[in-house]
Image 1: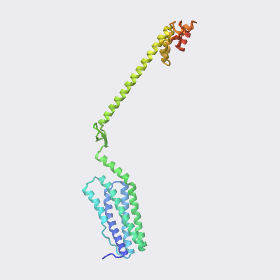
Image 2: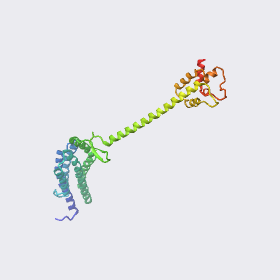
Image 3: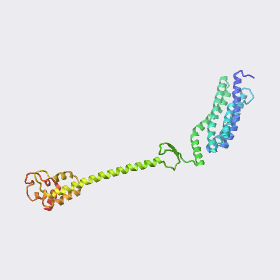
Image 4: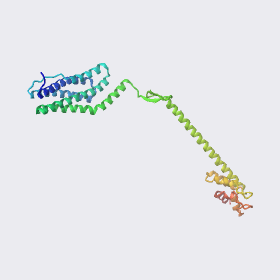
Length: 312
């Protein structure tokens, strides 16, 4: 008989939902055997009870419009069940992977039911069938709550299932590294990259090179410092300069000023020879040489004077 009225459409919608809920009730029974997560299992068992009540509401909805309850084949629900069964048969998944698939398949089922109830409610409301709309509204809220539960918890549950699959298969952490030729390759968690070793050796060579350069620089600096100290000691010991020119010792002393305490000690020792600029001053003699030039020893600084005063 051809459908020709809004009442016929409402009867179709109710029959479609009745068939879907009866088939989904069987699917939920299968789901309780496949799910191992305690939280999910508890929620699925609760939804089994809700689905049984939804079937009774649909029967009351038929009565409200004066019709006998009659299920009509719902091809969408048949397809959702077939998708689950074919994945289980054809893909031969592990228990963890099947449980992960069930999360997505269950969410598809819930969203189909939500769409079905909203469509039927719209028809009932348009016809003024308030009792039918109210009955269907109760079932809609339960489907929305179930879908929300899956959406809120799916990522957490999938991560837990993924970790369980890794442990079961003994899979090591996979890292991508570049080999000596520059191409990428997979290595296990404990393997080492050749390029990494080469980089380490190269880094070590650079480090050694810098250390050698630093050592050489320090060596030259130390040598120059020693030379300055030696010149200062010699100039302090000569005491007299010739030709009226500045003594080379005074230049060396200038370059080595600010040196270590060992330089001052050397100057003090050299000043005690009796010919230093400091000793000639302490003896009351002129601070200048016979030619009038400044003696290198007279520029030896406070350290020479200190040495002569101590000896006095």
